[in-house]
Amino acid sequence: MLNVALFGPPGAGKGTQSEFLTKKYNLFYISTGDLLRKEMAGKTKLGLEAQSIIASGGLVPDEIIVQIIEKTITDNPGSNGFLFDGFPRTYIQAYILEGLMIKLHTSLNCLISLSVPEEESVKRLLNRGLTSGRSDDNEAVIRNRLREYNDKTLPVLQFYKDKGIYIEVDGTKSIENVHDQITQIISHELSKSLFNIVLFGYPGSGRGSQGKALARHFGLEYVATGPMLDQEIKDDTETGRKINELYENGQLVPDEIVVQLIEKKLADSKDIKGFIFKGFPRTLVQSYILDGLLRKHGSSISQIIEIDVPTLELINRLDERSKTDRCMPYDNSTSKIVKRLQEHETKTVPVIDKYKQLHGVTKVDGLGSFDEVFQRIAEEIENGIKSLR
Ligand code: AMP
Image 1: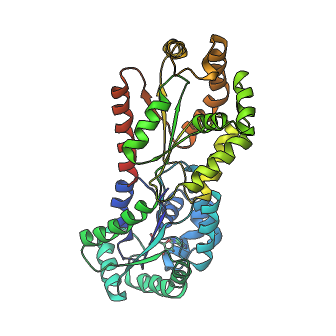
Image 2: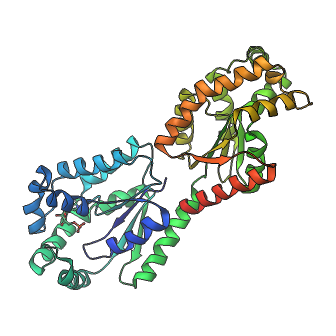
Image 3: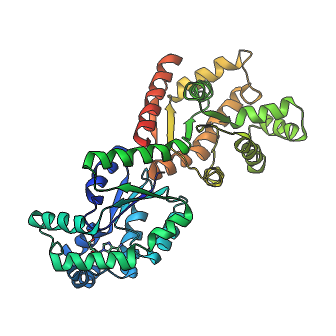
């Protein structure tokens, strides 16, 4: 997730820059000014309360702001990230934003401040007033808005300077120049964040071989719980013996074991661009665990892909595999194969459904040659990376 706040006095160009930023980075745009104007147009209780304050150029109480912003954020939890314009405007609102970000298990990447001298702001707003139809774009109200900005909004900068995520941009330059300055800052931010993929598919869908090849291709770390568990069996550790027994019965390995292995893998992975998870999360509980593990690393899921293969083809493939030396202890009989397919159906499909609602899941046709399926998935990942970076 990429969360950015655009900061600056009225007339600094926040709205103009927001337009291209939301499109380029696929962010959800939150302008408290726009939200308030919508409330006023709809003559809602909040709108009526805010009306006279906005008309005079004052700041609307934080209580009103928290209500409109919380509703908007919680209605759109699955977006790529948020772009805030005109918020936070008071020191209190900076804390409100912290709280909202925590609630969404994310954080603000940076606050970009467009610096523009006062007289330039006045000139721009008077100019805008000729066409905007906004009652607050006239000189007396503009002066009051700038007074409010100096008194109540400027102190917010210190909050972000202390956090080390304040970046200033020269807002007097051309629209294109400011655009370039902001793009550079965001590219830098995005290069710091991990790109994490969760790869789903029924047993036999090819997720393992595709996952490995995709990880190599995109320079990502491949995290597959199956092979990690197999390694424990091969090393004949106590955990390995326990796992073997569970496999024999076609059962899932308890979360405690899986979590420990993944936690170690994540902690050992340094200087990486992101992860591809395969075979995890397999249950709803594990989906919460993954959120927690990634959060611990200041990260989150970037893309979810499901490889789609018809059931008869799955059985066919697993049956074929069981006759080769690639046969796993968990698919050496028909009843075990069926049990694994059933486990996926009852435990993992609800996880995919949850992600469908929260993030969106990219379904990829898993029929065809290995290379064909690889190309299809790689294309989706490239699109995913492009839409995020
Ligand atoms: P804007 O469209 O951002 O220039 O906002 C227009 C007016 O809406 C401001 O002058 C304030 O009266 C009100 N407003 C917008 N955002 C906030 C906020 N975060 N806190 C308080 N008042 C706000």
